[in-house]
Image (cartoon, rainbow, N blue to C red; front, side, top):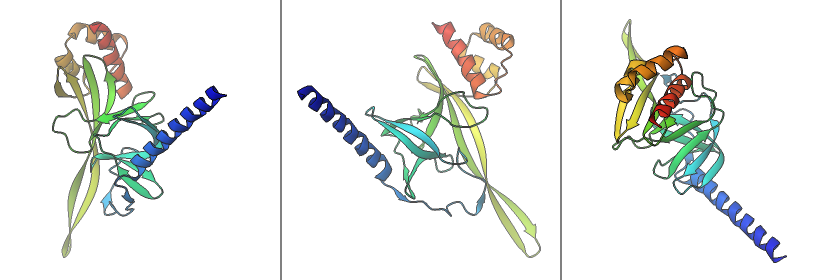
Length: 227
């Protein structure tokens, strides 16, 4: 009987910790959602068309499950939504975002993993997608948004139209250095080496780096060379 009581106490304690973590992430610095925030700008600053369900791993290894969020590539940051309010995640407290069903084309198969930027002087709130990671090298993808203006001259006035434009950048993190690379085989070879092996692999597997999954598989092959 004592063992059952002890087990129940442990379960209740775990549940209370989970609830506390959920409450913390969803209430700290939350504010009402501003539906008109980008009303005058065409396009969207967000990574996903609609908020997606994700799990959040804190720096204390606590897991917060089934949170709805989106990534803002213009204002840089992960926005968590609940009950008509939004919370902007502090990258110093939340170590990893795991999205099981991201639904993005040309992305990796399986889970999408977002982590705080490895840049030493990165923008506050900035997260990168971690595509591949090993003890010696990590490949990141950065999603960013730029606001562009287009001036249209009409009789009597000049109309300024604003639009969000989406960009993606790839970075290799190796030996403490963060290097920007294009999604081209030669760019990866310049940083990673193993020219003959990587070219032979790409040719044999008809891998032209057309998607993030292609790039991930190239990195996995490179990782096998390093073993």
